Every structure is written in structure tokens, then in C-alpha cells.
Length: 135
Image (tube, rainbow, N blue to C red; front, side, top):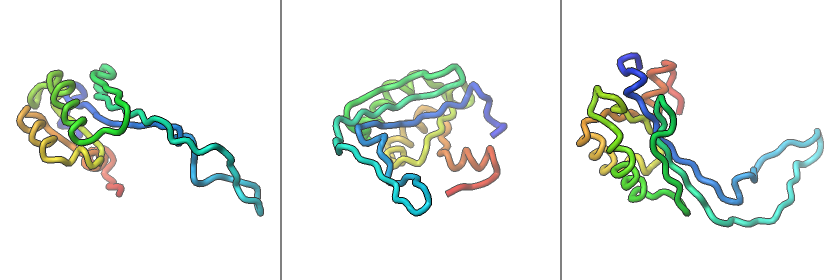
């Protein structure tokens, strides 16, 4: 990881929330007792957010109703992220993303490559930082 300066690296990630977010399948209870949780099942509206995190903080973000599709993610990358970036080895030129399926679409890699930037998925990044590969 030392081949990249902190100014070059940026992370992109998504999250989502709906009314089910606080509910868990598992819980804790005293020995011999069953964990119980009562609540009304309401899915409600799902909100999803995506952001570009740099050394200076959040550089770009977007919140939408529903989930991010590949098309919506590519639009965010093309219109909000890439205009802020520069070709490697310039500032904001190394993009690190997690293993979400929308990141593996061919158009995502093509956009990043055409911008002259480097792309690392979080597994490669974790290997470089810790030397341990986690699956």
C-alpha cells in the first residue's frame, strides 16, 4: 500500500436504510430463555446513499429513494466522482471499492480505466494493509 500516497487514495461505498434496519434475526437472553422481540413489520421506504471519501472528507455523495442499481452507480461515478479525480499518479487517482456486484459491471472498470486511474477492490486493499486475506 505504500506505493500510493494518502492524497491519491479515495474510497467509495454505499449504504441503505429502511424501517427493517433496526431489526435483527438473533438476540440474547438469559440461560434457558428464548430471545424475544415484538414489533410491527413495516418495510417502509428504502433510502440508499453513496459517497466518495478522501483524505479531506466526503468529496461527493448522493442519496436516492430505493436501491442503487448498476446504472445509477455508473451515473454517480461518471457525473459526480470522475470529474473530481485525476489520472494516476495524481491526486484522487486510486479508487478503492468493496465487493458489491454493481462495482463489477464492465462499464465501471471501463470508466475508471479510461480516466487513467487505478482501481482496487477492498480485498486487494486489505491484503496490502494487513497481509491477511479475509473471505
